[in-house]
Length: 418
Image (cartoon, rainbow, N blue to C red; front, side, top):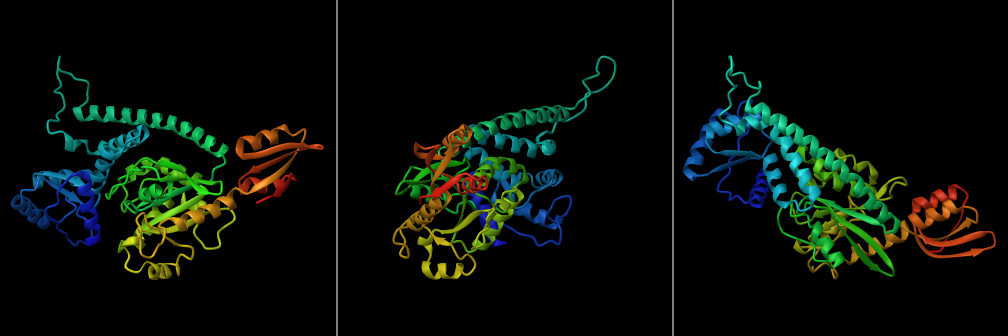
């Protein structure tokens, strides 16, 4: 319970509020009118007056009725966890698409709660010469919001095709990809900056990064990997924000490799791992990956990165313990650590090995008359060399393992070079 309230306090700090107190109540079930019990509401009102507080944050989702009743009874602004996270997302969104997604989530959250925004609602009086449009101000606002929601959804759908075209261009370059996922503030952006050397925005706050950011990482020996930093997950994720994770979901689904970043220094890291995996499952992305040591031939690999190893008193002892559950886990850190000579070198080695496995160099024997296959190789793979020999075109290329298997199934001559 304390850990949950500590996280709410960090959310409050990220949103720009100063926390001056906290209180809890043990209930078998929330009350329908206030969520809290009536006695607790009275006690809270007294605490607010003594502390001169102007805002109450509740670490749960409140129904429209509960929020309205609490604000009326306490005489101050009341925000539930969903509204706090939405407010943070508004201030953190940078790209056009992220702003559209957050605006959509806000409107969907606001729609059933409009009565809290109005105190002057009254139906226009009837009678000759006084018959109005038959709508209250509330009904008018609801109609406007529903129309705006429809417009935003159509605009977001238009951006899906644009992102699909971008991904096709990346596939044509045949650079393998990895998606960094994890709990918010696990250090994903710090890892991306350490890997790429680019000036990636990093801040020790929840939801410092909302927009998906990709960088190509040079692994040496001619091998490269495109690594994408995605928005962090959090417990009790508001369902209104699920649509806002669409770009993250697409990056995860299209990635060749999933890098699950875990804050090893956090006392509740196991719960955070469960939260991330549960959210991925809700988004429909978890089934694409296989976290087991041996892997699944039809699924992509997951690598668990226990980050912030520089904050651990005994990094190697910690790694030995977690490898009982995650055999291929890695310790990483964006800052130097006593237990790690080079903070991200082990990750670079894994990415390089994965790049070699995912994009082997092969020589494909293309029949002279098969222009369609030759064009597909130039479009979907990284062609290194091409020359004609007898009745075939020999194409040396770096291609996906999945495409390699398909060519062999179709009877095309393929020779692995490295």
